[in-house]
Image 1 (cartoon, rainbow, N blue to C red):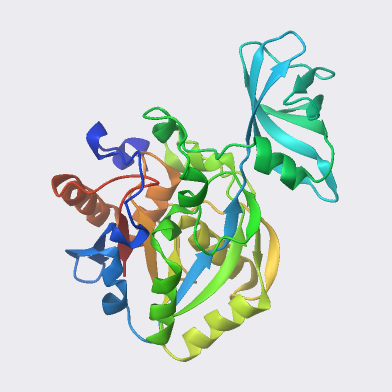
Image 2 (image 1 turned 90 degrees about the vertical axis):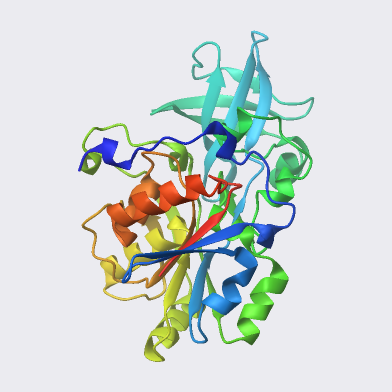
Length: 345
């Protein structure tokens, strides 16, 4: 399929630069695949739309304050984005570096009077190896010096704000490791999850640490030529058991976000069922994919030509998604990470 089939024109005014005043105040479009019906709701209406026995599968990854600003030995400004740590070596990280001139192994970056890093290798695709030097725990360093890595389309509209560290994070985030939020989950409040549970709509949590590839658009004219970057995931026995229980009782498995979808579908493809597992997921979902794990999907409205949009089109059908996006623009929905939501069933 050609990339141009997944492009659309979006007025800049519909790109949400700020979150809704309250998480569940966002709008919710419901798209029904069998009858191609589209309807409009509030996200807080979700309890009346889902059914008892349905299972929400959510990604409990936590966004790191992964952006660090420093200075080279030459005095030039440099910005570092943490991508992935080395297991058992908290001082070693794979990073992206943004600077006016190329960075070379052996160069030093200073972040504060007591925190610095040495470039220990060039790893390709814009990635470098850094060895940090710091007192105490690295988590404390990030808490003090790190910034929330907002998506580029938000940064182009405004500066980082005091509440971004809270709002660009799900209320159930508990496993640090992502450079981007699983944004479909931003609409949930703790009270809403409790209400859903009391109505028989349970939740299961898996982890997939979202990498910078989530912002990388498909560049190939033929979408099948694109390759996904690997991301670490874990499905524990509790989550796998809840999926199996929902299936046994006839409930629907509703993935919250493309990251939960890719994790479930990767495990189902790899093992033939949802079972405890962890590793690196590399699944690229595009039209023609046979879905094995999910019956529904909660998602935001995605960038043109992006892999999440292609995934959504694979699940709902490209024609229906084109119609849904045209309707969303007509009805002035808010788009992208801080925007409104869509439920596809």
